[in-house]
Image (cartoon, rainbow over all chains, first blue to last red; front, side, top):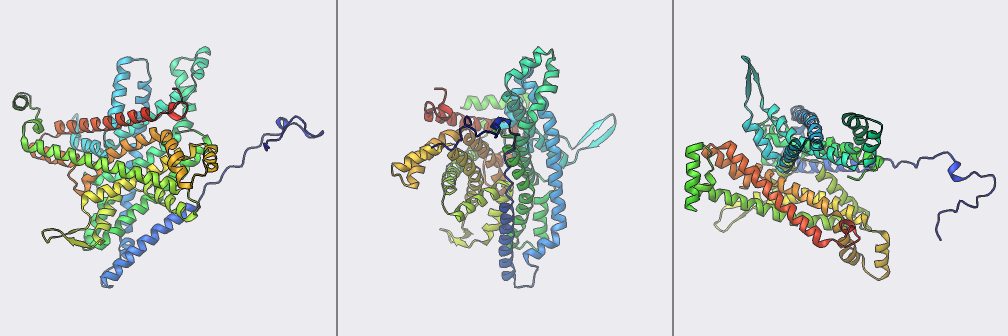
Length: 288
Length: 252
């Protein structure tokens, strides 16, 4: 038997189901359990590796945990630099990507094809190659009207990261606009909105909901990609990690705990964002 | 071949566009070897990561809570840490702890070399994403289909292998091809541990012959073609697998 009650034959005195006040289904709470267990497991792993290192060194040198604790201000300073690069790259890339996405959907044919080509090019190129591209081909200073504007390497890296972000954001914008029913455009047209007004006042506000989860997903990817800047010589967490390792005498058994610490920092930063993205996705009920 | 090489030499003399990989035999050899290494990395990691994804998605349906939590932990950990740090952690961290072995010439070498570590860590990284992707496919298979298979006396593994996985694969192919494209692009990270793949040899070539912009464009174009090949194969596969009325074959 089906467990859906038949509403036709309600007992007298009880109102129809449709007349009852609308009740929201209880929202599933975000599971916090996993986060703690994983973080604990991670610390445990680091402790085991560090303990092993301590046992090997025989106590004469600093143990791995002591090394991490001693240098953590410097390492966290490097990590804050990673976050700075990722936030900057994400903001620049989002603004450019919004423009690129709108151009790709516009009525101007040559601009449309150029926009499509740019999107595909920067989306399908490896991030590291684009980073090399930015590092080698952007000059380290600009000279405008006699004043020299220096361009430090981390700004070049930021530009290098914002290129793929731009292309990905353009795709997100395009996908979100495409997913809206065309009735929205027609209704706006019949109310005599111009194309620009329709876009800014009707279409894009509705798209924010659909764009937010994939946009945040992209942000975690950018945050995790910023460590690649160490390959091209920008001073950030991974560069500092290897410098710390050298400063502590270059003991090989220190490497696992140090890189483990870097992983832990990124995990603690990215995991809450991922959970929040999941939560938003479920709340907005958008398929991505 | 010689005529082509001559033409590219004149191109360099007249315009300054220096494409050494065409006329310089040494550079050409290096480039082809780098391309081969990138292909080797891509193919092995694609196969291994898909294996991890299939097995992981099966383990996530396990009745044992401990196994499910283990797989979830693996997925969460590898999805939320930078792939480059993972590679460093494996290569520098674990690689130093592992014992050394003697090779055929009596030299002490690491048990697992840099190419193997790159394959292992990239597979684990992409595999974590693949587990999630296959899981979304498994969840899309109707419960009634599984119940029907159960009533026909299939074992749990039999259901997964013969009924759930073939259907799930068709649902998750678009997401899977996205991830595999990402994986091909991520193989550039092996550069950091000196695996002589495409980016690594390209850097050597542009340092030697001072043709940075040209070589970079060639590099980007090569990756563009590689990604294009992956997308093409996945498209063909999607078409070949499509069942009328199910998933991507719904319109047929």
